[in-house]
Amino acid sequence: MADLRAVFDDQRRAFRTPTLDERREHLGRLAAMVVRARPRIEQAMAADFTVHPAQLTAMTEVFGVAGQAAYAAEQLPAWTAPQQRFADPAFAGTATAAIEYQPKGVLGIMAPWNFPFLLSLGPLADMLAAGNRVIIKPSEVAPACAELLRELVADTFAPDHVAVVCGGVDLAKEFATLPWDHLLYTGNSAVGREVAMAAARNLTPLTLELGGKNPAIVPTVDAESVAQIIGNKAVKSGQVCIAPDYCLVPATQAADFIDLARAHVAAGYTASPDCTGIITGRHLDRLLAMLDEARDHGHRVITLEPGAETDRATRRIPLTLVIDPDDELQIMREEIFGPILPVKTYRTLDEAIAYVNAGDRPLGLYVFTPDAAVARHVLDRTISGGACVNTCAVQGVLPSLGFGGTGMSGYGRHRGIEGFREFSNQRGVFTRGQADTINTFFPPYT
Ligand code: NAD
Image 1: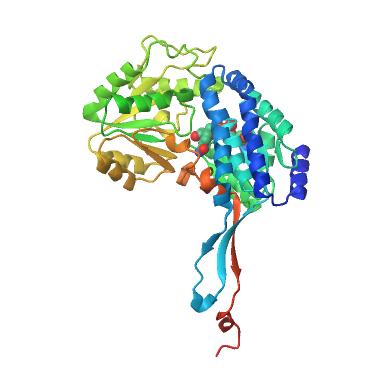
Image 2: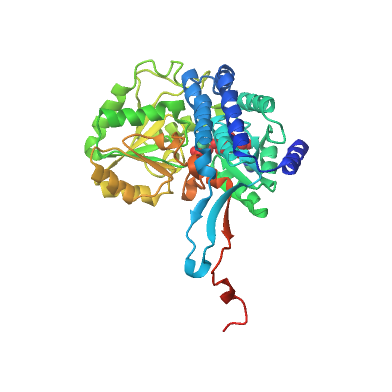
């Protein structure tokens, strides 16, 4: 904790606004760092998850970060250019008005375990683009990734520019109490609330990236919609904040949904290297308890792959459907964050929409239909951080699309121009010209 404070003070002292070329160079260094370290990042992910597909690590943790840094570097001239604003000549004469973007200063990132590089270094790209200095606190739940992140960043950046501090919950709590110029927390809502309270004591501006229950509304059940939903649930065994949490299916099409889901899952998937392990034994037990509770309440629990079983050694669980679970069950009260998909049935689309709106506002919402009017109907009557039509989660991977939640799924945005602006001080600058009427505000009034 003394180190954290010392690094924070050093960064504060060293802070100055970098030039555009310097920022571009920082982003290039970040991209090169992850690309060079690709094999080590793949190993660290496999160490923390027991099994984590190398290709998926490359696509998300390596090229996801490099792509975001490259996109920000390319956009920098447009993002940093002052935005000219209207100044009414009747009042302002020949004056000019503009929003200018300055760095905020020294920023903190509290990252989760599920995407340990993408969700620390991705926001770092936004923050470097905006000209800030940054300290990252990785999650203690993925220790191999945290240690590698610390080493890579220490080899790439001066500690008074970008640093990583590793430690447990005590360090995380302390981290939230520092007087950051902006703090980004990604993780669960219960801790998010504590972080928000700690930040409030310093009036620290905060971005909260939380989770929740993302619905997939499926007015049209067909092979493609089911493949998108089941495929997305299989990514990292559902340990993705924007994975579909549960789906809403017309009662008349539930049997089709189950058949198509079964057909989609290849035999042998659970035992293959493409099936990610659950992060810890505690997280695995929580998921198994959810399934036990559903069975105890007499609900149909369907393992999609015939004969597939949970493997405690590698912490892998087969993809499993739970049909029409009661809302009192843990599986419908909490974010699942695992390879379990509740299939709730509905009679009318508006009933499905009302069900979604009765819950907390989700991070992601997905609708599956070939009919653009039906998709519009759903989008116009729901509110979520992001949404997709006819797929899931892609709103969370485009470098150009600002990303974040709303209501209980969080506030603020990172990535794209939204991220750049979030981590910039957006200063309104008025430059006086001639022939204005500013003096009419000064006493004496006539
Ligand atoms: P986690 O346990 O790794 O915690 C996240 C961070 O909080 C870590 O850095 C940890 O050190 C810190 N922390 C833990 N306890 C703390 C405390 N008492 N006080 C202060 N800090 C503390 O991650 P998690 O919460 O298990 O992550 C999973 C959750 O994160 C899910 O709800 C998921 O939906 C959400 N998530 C959201 C996004 C998003 O972008 N919105 C992305 C990924 C995950």
